[in-house]
View 1 (cartoon, rainbow, N blue to C red):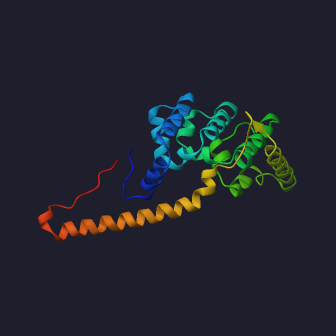
View 2 (view 1 turned 60 degrees about the horizontal axis):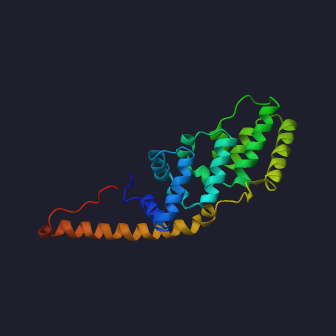
View 3 (view 1 turned 135 degrees about the horizontal axis):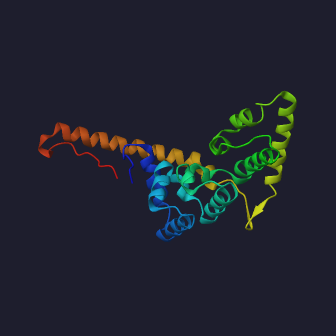
Length: 211
């Protein structure tokens, strides 16, 4: 699928796929296709951020539905930014959307950049959308944003409460596991290559092909 076996993302992809049963993976692919993702777009999203595939089908469907049907994001936009699917609906996506929608409806802003709205850190978001105004107005904007944060905690969609993605909570542990696997894999690869170079009997050094 385009991964370099010598890079850490390769092991993340192996871990993500290996942790799921085939029927579960099939259900997730079917969920993506309900939102018109092609096989190529599914592959592209997986290459960009393999961990997103570990989300539950319910979380995937709720987040995709909100991004596509409420925010107007195109499926291809999400396929190029699969990290969006791991963002907290309650703490990030919903309050920022409600905040931006309020500004649009009041004519404070004329359009919104979805990349800036969703993919910036909390600090940069405040700088771009709140602190860009004069002090008095910025204070009012910050209060409005905090109101949207509080409101999103009480919202429900299709009977499912917005929850931070479990994958995001597991990321530090996953990162440590992947790091150890990559180090061991790299050491074995280097030893094998060195052994081949020093022993002509075995022929030229074997190279790993990309998936």
